Image (cartoon, rainbow, N blue to C red; front, top):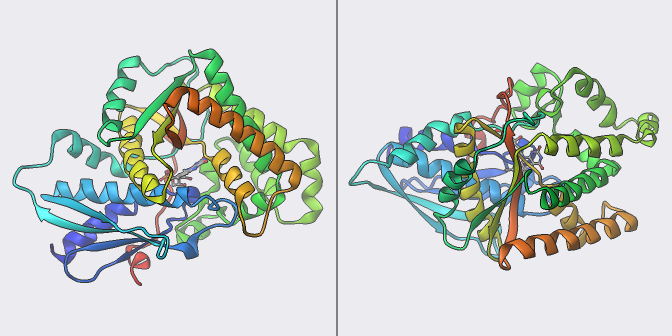
Amino acid sequence: MTNDEINFLLDQAILAPSGDNWQPWKFILPGNGTIELRIDFDRRLPFWDEDPGTLYLSAGAVIENIRLAAQHIGYALKADYCWSSDNPARVAVLSFQLMTSPSSASDEALFAGISRRVTNRDFYNPFRFVPAETFLKINEIAKTLDGFHLLWITRQQKKDYCKLVHFMMRADRLWMGNRSARLIMARSIRYSAAEIESMADGMDVRVMGMNPFDRLMIPLIFSPDPRLEWIHRLGIAQAFSLRTGLQLHTSSACGILLGPEGTPLDFVRAGELMERVWIALNQEGIALQPMCALPILVANVKSSGQTLISAREKEIASKLWQDFSEFIHSHSNGKKALFMFRAGYAAAPKVRLPRRKRNSFLGG
Ligand SMILES: Cc1cc2nc3c(=O)[nH]c(=O)nc-3n(C[C@H](O)[C@H](O)[C@H](O)COP(=O)(O)O)c2cc1C
């Protein structure tokens, strides 16, 4: 493989999604045509990446983009997964072999969708439901990996959907009420064009708040200035949680990617599927927003490091997790929920989040 080809693969790789757009990856190029993918733990955010599952999910998406891009230029990807507890940063060594037949039409379509995949945090169209056959079509993609399964809970399944909405609303209320979580999230918010261009990571405020009122409130809500703390006594967390409820009630369905144990490798493999499913949904005109607050809160409950949540918050999060786990168990034959999102119809966001330059990902 030539340097230009490797660069082409890396340019597609870094379009992968990551929590708060932190792009926590590194690529080692030993010069023999392989790519070693590592997690960049220096880009791990306290609180938000306490659950390393989010990091490994995004690494999986990177691998999937490389697979699709490699096939597009005639190479089959071989991924040797090499995670170990001794060296948790090393995810996989990726090597390439010339293909004897061209990439399938469905994979070519997915390749074309890599640069158009996007997170949509807007309200969706509450009157338009995703047809059942679309769910079946997307599920075919999720079936490509043994042991994984995509569970849909649609808004028409009223009782179950309302349970899920309740879990997500409570989780969002909990983290929004936590000052540490807000201040760490604040590090990811980019307010000006200059900041967006120079940092090329984090979240442009315009994708977080889709309307002028949200955009007015975000700098106040996430301000580190203690003199503005009084705002939170006005019920911001409750209002945010209501907003989450409304967002979910304008969505067609929640998707839950189920898999085996929940080891780092399971998350990587789930991330590969996540990327395929996400691109395929976007290509059907369906918007997607991950909903990951609950597992993140629970990781903070279980954390052996510096605790950022109070005893009361721990109690609420643990109970929520217990109820959520029972819910998942009753739908999943003992599989684990590895990634959750809402899906529905909405206009595509006008703003796309940038990625850092390719070279900034290279190194040991
Ligand atoms: C593992 C993972 C978890 C995420 N969790 C959330 C989430 O809980 N809420 C949310 O709005 N976006 C979430 N995102 C979306 C990212 O913020 C988004 O991918 C990133 O900002 C890049 O934007 P893009 O997807 O539009 O390219 C998550 C993404 C990944 C990969």
